[in-house]
Length: 342
Ligand SMILES: Nc1ncnc2c1ncn2[C@@H]1O[C@H](COP(=O)(O)OP(=O)(O)O)[C@@H](O)[C@H]1O
Ligand SMILES: [Mg+2]
Image 1 (cartoon, protein in one colour):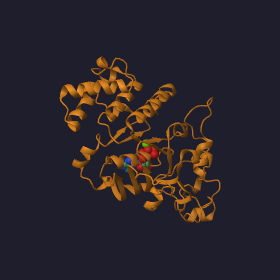
Image 2: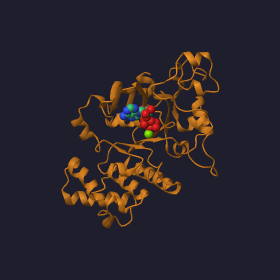
Image 3: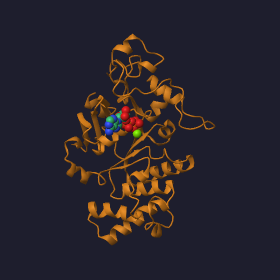
Image 4: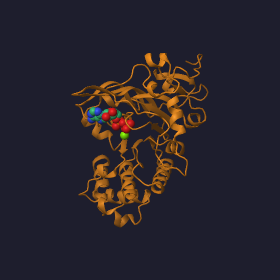
């Protein structure tokens, strides 16, 4: 995967350089049972003010990818085995943890599936928002409290002037997720990483939170990496999509191209398993089998044991990510590659 393939524009209007460029990222784990290649050569770019969705089943390496960007992978057992994570051209993999403390919250923020893992139960929600504002923005306590109330209003918490003094356990799951978003965006980061932000919520609340994220993005111009296993969420939210399988990118495209002209058999399987409205959500039932454990990766294409189209070549040779056409790449031996562009 080359840089030009990640960032190349259409040739006509030159595009602004991406806010974040992940190049050939490898995050492995050295465990007692051996080496886990959990993220194994992942590349993508995030454009300013846009949403990139990273989609794949559980265990594909989505969270390890986002934790790598935040530099929150525990080392050990984690190993930075290679690659670059360029934020405005600066490689986050080269930063010290002290430097990362300034970057986290201020330039890149993250929200998690379960807000209680990031909210401290013993502090009032306002105090938790204030803390970042005082630390990163040098605000006075009074200024920071006013900003915290403003942020709670922005995420549509009713009566923010009194809710600012609530404890997390006094709020519903949906409200806590709103507080998380308020906290993550308080210092106006250029990039928000949202790792399955609505998976734990019921469908109605999920739709509200996603709508809220879109609205805030339009207002603040925040770029979003949205991690999800749900292609329904991708269709609603994403501009660009990366499909991950077993630590690799198998397909990368604009959202329209991904749904109108999906190429990788894994992507096709995911799309086929989008639940219809009347069915239960979040079941990926039509792809037989499961994601391989990162210590027992198959030879050749990692999807080949589950792929209905796999041949001997797929079982022996790993397909590289190749350009199908501008902005659409796929790692499958049987996709119709544009040889002129490749
Ligand atoms: N701290 C860790 N030590 C060892 N293996 C890990 C660790 N964290 C994650 N992994 C492994 O990395 C793989 C990818 O995990 P993850 O990124 O959480 O998947 P996803 O978010 O796509 O569901 C999994 O097989 C998981 O077991
Ligand atoms: Mg995850």
